[in-house]
Length: 117
Image 1 (tube, one colour):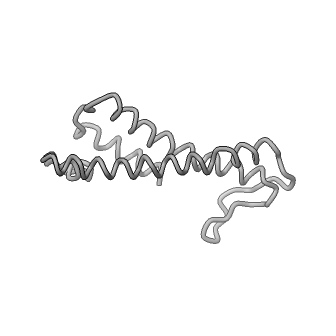
Image 2 (cartoon, rainbow, N blue to C red):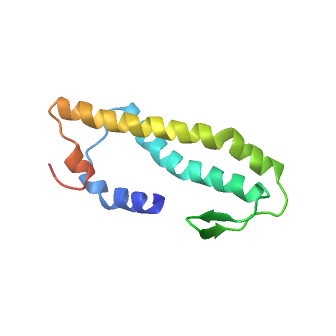
Image 3 (cartoon, one colour):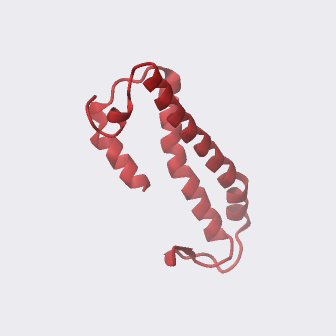
């Protein structure tokens, strides 16, 4: 899904207006960074947990170590949940700002969906 999202953003780069503020730029950058970082840290934790392979919907995604690798497990335990909550908050803020823009008379949703408004 991350690859699809990045490809979508790259394909629609020419349709995007310039960012309104530094906060907008940083918010979007943080969304993309966390979309990559959260699953990566989760996979590192799973790999080093000593629990065996990672299976998603019954399909094996990656092999795991037979024994626990402390630094991998600790990294995931320390960061994965916190970063996931931060991603959730940023997504909720993104949705809220779409609503705010619409109430202000600037409907950005068609642009976000790849259509000209």
